[in-house]
Length: 306
Ligand code: RIB
Ligand code: CA
Image 1 (cartoon, rainbow, N blue to C red):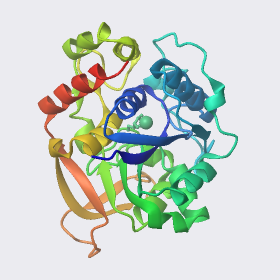
Image 2 (image 1 turned 180 degrees about the vertical axis):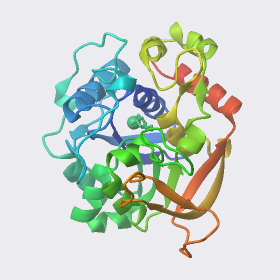
Image 3 (image 1 turned 90 degrees about the horizontal axis):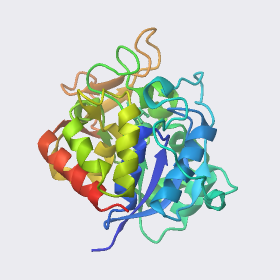
Image 4 (image 1 turned 45 degrees about the horizontal axis):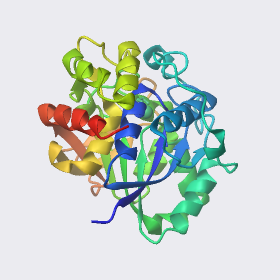
């Protein structure tokens, strides 16, 4: 079967690192481009982290730097979770900067999509600033996009504010543009991310598995997305898992919008399961995950890395 062409938009980020590894070593995905966005830590740091990961993975994938700040809101970050570098815990080699394109991520995405002989799937696993800018600058690309499978949002409470998940909270206006794009969207949010846990006994299997597993193990020792002992949340790997093993998930197609005006709820994803808003479904929401099978898939996927 031919590989599915994808573009990954990311803000590494310890859980991004695991998701990137799984996507890049998958036999089923053709990663055409990786774009970076201000999110967990600054644009400079997430771009540096992306290049350092590609060096470790020995993968020559083009990288393009994107938005250094959200559309409207002031930047927030998650260095309290991922560390000051965004990937604390492992000593990476210096990257191969020749992979870094001169052009902006939005231009690079436009060119890759518009010139592709197959429809491209977008895999955003950070704030949606670049994707929103892409749709505003080059709306014609929508014709050659298969779907958007994103990590973000929540049908319930948040992890960045009372009601907002980090990727949406970081750039709510961008999220609103993406969710109203008219494209098929799959939302892998906190409903599944909070259940996609890797426990110490699972991480120990990674430690001496291979170079990638060893790196991920040491990042996990620093990751404060849960805690090493109570289970680390593999938020971003859920979006990759949906692409590679959708049967892990229970989904509901419904209407989702983004709150922009609530003084205390800005960035909340409004998931209208009961149809109060009388709007057509625009999102396939992942509402549950087979956590045991996810763990097995995660470990097996890292086994395929270098
Ligand atoms: O809420 C989790 C999301 O925020 C993940 O993408 C994580 O990397 C952070 O960006
Ligand atoms: Ca991320």
